[in-house]
Image (cartoon, rainbow, N blue to C red; front, side):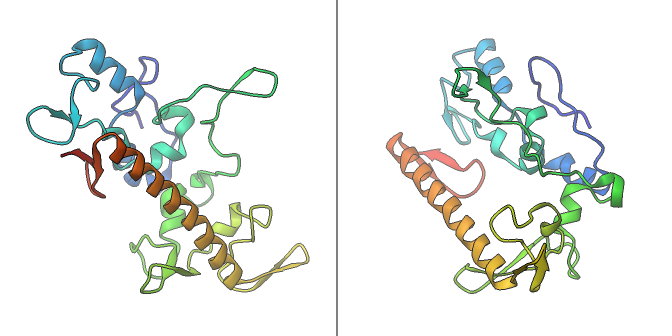
Length: 216
């Protein structure tokens, strides 16, 4: 699948994802840093630098790269969808912080489902896309997908099991898995709150819907 935006002037291509090709077709973002740079270079007066995010006169959708971006994030080494900060190791050598995670498996050759359908449609309630259950307060109370533990084993926090399971001689419980995911979620929520405060300091209001940030 060839994407509409470019990386170093070339359209990136996602691998064959089986049934998840349908998902990735929409969830690959709408641009990346190449898109922003090219737009500014073509006309600085109307480019991303000159205009405010949002819709209508005097605005431009600068957040398009963040829209429906799940598959672009999974295959970030190909898409380079994020803003890239230069990173070096302890010896000063450049490293790639955007390489795909080592435990990720596209899964398509084994089942034909690919990474989207294999994880998000692995429950009896097809097309709900939910891998967890939450209570009325939004707290994760249970994990529903049986696929998580196949990649996220005990080496990553607690094993993400849907029922109490012994793995390599260690008992992993469904309660512990849910608690671990809720702890992870709290960290993400905290990061989003920090981002929201930084946006406010720049005169931008986070909206929670597309294009996610608007000027007053």
